[in-house]
Amino acid sequence: MSAVNPFGQVLVALVTPMTADGEVAWDDVEKHIDDVISAGADGIVVTGTTGETSTLTDAEKLRLVEVGKDVAAGRAKIITGGGSNETAHAIELYKASEKAGADGIMIVTPYYNKPTQAGILTHFRLVADATDLPVILYDIPGRTGVPIAYETILRLAKHPNILAVKDAKGDFSQVSRVLNQTDLMYFSGDDANVLPHLSIGATGLIGVTANIAPAPYRAIVDAVNRGDLAAATAEHRRLEPLVRAAMTHVPGTVASKYILHGLGRIGSPRVRLPLVGPEEWEAALIEDELDLVQGVPGVDFHNFRPDRNAAAGGALPKVAGTTR
Image (cartoon, rainbow, N blue to C red; front, side, top):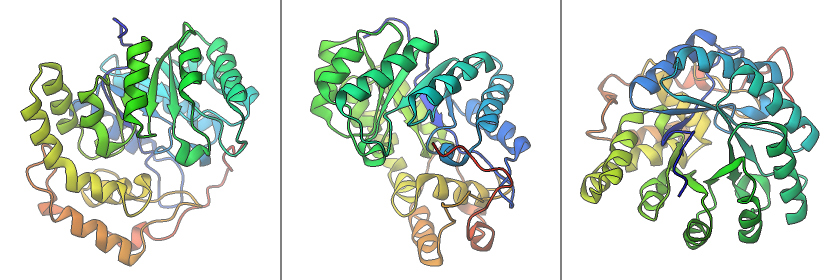
């Protein structure tokens, strides 16, 4: 495993708080970043899937990097996610992100185009060539339509800037093979599988539920680091109903904003179309799961005030995001 980890271990896939009309709520962004860092996060991924990258403008993405750097003030690394399914656009965006102060970049497999493995290899290499920043490859075939094949990962591992993989594929045997044959670091990209990933040698996590509760993820990682599987497992089990609430009924962004707003930690649960807030029956399922959450550090649902009306529907912002 690489001796130097430039990303951190407890990374939050940050939601992008918005106003009721779908504009980025910059005060809430600053407060939320500070909250999760104070609770134990040592890395923040802005403009990732959970940050609604698909409907953010490039200008918003770059400002999120700048704001993240200002708020973190050296306490946590700021990684920019998102990217593009057009290689030329991805290169420009990551170059600009480097100038804006990003500490690293997370490149997602080109989505919708369904390139061959040769196309995926070329895309990642050209984007990694374009900046001096360390790179995390983001392997999430459920969203992109194509996995990064084992052989492709081995070839990409030879690139000096490509240091890590965010795994949302769930193929644990492949993770073990890659860890055995390369120096790549692995980050769990599936909240339910954080502890299993760490137990076979992953470096850390890039989590959605960590928006709501970073402290238990810090505790899990610290316990694994010191070889205390029992302590890590206890935290994992406490987190399970919260992970289920955030990740199984509606998109993680939608549920996380709904929960954060109910806890009074962001001003609005609004998401941008085509995402919409939970319908009544979905909200009821989320709330049923939350009733099972007990003893999770940093989260108190006794004062939970969900607002289904505030969350309903989705926003059409004044300026369209970049969809290619």
